[in-house]
Image (tube, rainbow, N blue to C red):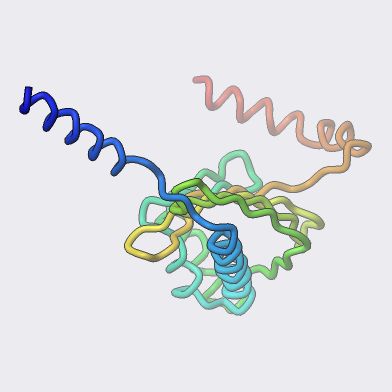
Length: 172
């Protein structure tokens, strides 16, 4: 009987270790401010062509999804693509219009969406950051061009041929 009681207590202890910690509203707000600053600096680093700082925020196994259907890059592929632009001192300058940040219950993952003022007009970015060793790293970022609903037909017409060719290429 004693063994059974000890086993039960051990299982309860294990279960309590797996429970996400309860974080306060203040902790959530602090995380959001931190992420806001990180993402603002990430965009600023691109505008100022700070190559190393820009890519330091991205985790080694992160992905960047660009506006073109073929732009699904690992961090290394994205670095290779960006290097010539940064070297010439002419990357991109995205200004945040608004950003929504969401925090996981365990406070170790955040996801966000943002509207950006860019040379392409308004774009939407979304991403996921994870905290590891007390450091936030960008795991996944998606950039898309925001198209007003009333302009969708014109965009469909403009890209129908290119899309057909790409679909055929992918399906082969």
